[in-house]
Length: 351
Image (cartoon, rainbow, N blue to C red):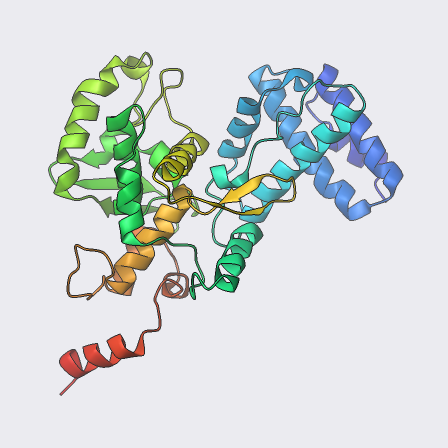
């Protein structure tokens, strides 16, 4: 049972309308008698209200962009926590809307497809199950064929140079969208085609906290055109250190990046709805994280056109580039093709 001291701690730092709505919703939850749910919802709602208060956002008039920013800022946390945060905000606004505290639900159209919610996401697992039932995959991850990846690149939308560079870098480097958003110009060695990445999923001091990823020379033109020319025409460019930005923001959000991929995959005819999340939002086959999965799968199995011999990239090297601490995580991308395994061992095994 929660004490009054617990309630004081839950609302610490909140004032005005932020404290008012927080307390009313928590009282509603307490009346339903679900103690475990109450503790989780309290904590998550407090984080949302603190975010709103710090950003000067009235929670009664919060917009979809405010919810997306809140989710993006928490992507460094455990995936289960990201899910709880978004779920709490969503159900809070259903409650608030039904009681006329707000006129809209700003979380209604926010989906975890627009984030880097990774492979332990139960909805991603559901995607895999649906595809397996349809006979479209035997794998444990959602990856798309190399030819479908190329089709997406051929439909970059507008602005074409920026969007194509975003999508090609996601695929060639295998970075998460939050990591792509965090790339600063100073992180890029254009001569070596090397980018320094600060991991979105590791802690400072971890072996994989800092890693390096690499892009192909076929991106040189896009890089030059974007960095030296088109980027400069964006209003925030003079004050932005980041590689990617928008006309309104000095740093492109991870959810913005994922929406670019999702929408252009639709335009290319390779995206499709797979399932729905708990809030009724459509889960799509292709998102930014799908490009990461696809890069890992194609690299591990040598199934992309740049690897005509099908040798693949050694798993221990791929793990380093992807930022995996354990090889087991990387091994899930490796297909069990015994014919290929036998061929390799007959040709290159010990004598």
